[in-house]
Image (cartoon, rainbow, N blue to C red; front, top):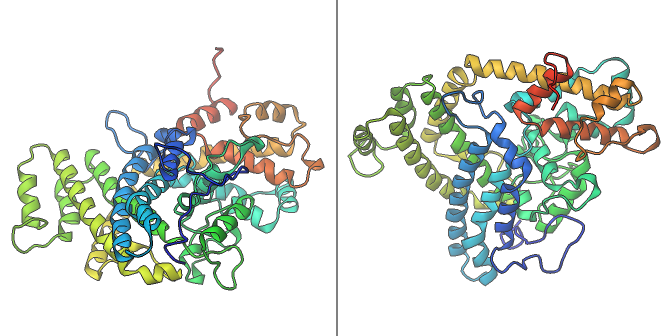
Length: 467
């Protein structure tokens, strides 16, 4: 790979124009950002769980606020790295310098904005609930699905992955219309953290970071292949539908990694789960304990001591740490330029930090798992997610496989017209896969509250009111 071919203004969609950058005000990559932020799937993130259950009197992050903050960090990383690339290659021409100095930041910001857009309700437990449902199929339902789907298609569901679903949400033309977001290829490539098909994913034995999870469903293989060919992203030798990562992915991933490690702890402090002293003990060691100048522990402690409110103390440390990490990670990216372009860097950028820094990251990870991700209310929402997502799938998958049953016909009336269903799947090739995808699209796109409300109504827990 090389920096000159890794960007393009070409977009997905049937109509490919010779000049995709015909807006006098916004460049192609700024338009990506606008299309995402005005989209319904993005707005629905405001009612999807990040870590803690959606707030009562105390506000904590949801998927939308998290995505906006990741976007801010991603834009800064893109700007820093882009300036360094442009400066390192001064003879590459004006278009090259324009992109890396001014437009890479927009690409990474757009990718960050959309990185969670495919996540189902109830956080990662929603993903697990979908996988578990399809892994535990029994009887006739299992036989029908196994007979109708290829191995890779089946694994789209048994290995359901929010990253793959994000790629589908952003590229799939629902109802066979020109309704996809038609984003540029670099933005889409910068979202695909695990660029492989489902059948090759979730395989750590390969040693490839691309197969840690998966990045596109069977239905989007051709779309990703075309993006990869256009941008010069190579396939991994000997692996079908497994690609090297686009270098921009590492910046999107790093922005997310930086944010959730500090923001989850900030939320925990606001909820009274983590003390100020503990928060300081986890983040201040990243800074020098020698002297009292800028970016030393003494400097930060002095600034924090002048703040009265504990929440604002945490906010100050968080902001200072994020700025520090942006600079460090951008430099780490450039230090690994050769491996990034060769497609051989098989770990994320935070794991490339100096040993003493990554040891501190691991300490944050361990503390968060023990005291945050296994906190009682977090576990409760995960259990609820399993039951609600599993319950909805049970109802709607049965209905789509047995559409002539009276109750099935009524249930299918509840599926949004955005997700079309083949009325007689026995007469259309690939219809069973298509119909199951439409049901999963419908359920994974729900907000937490809508999923809860619909589950209660169709199971008779609550009776709908006449409106």
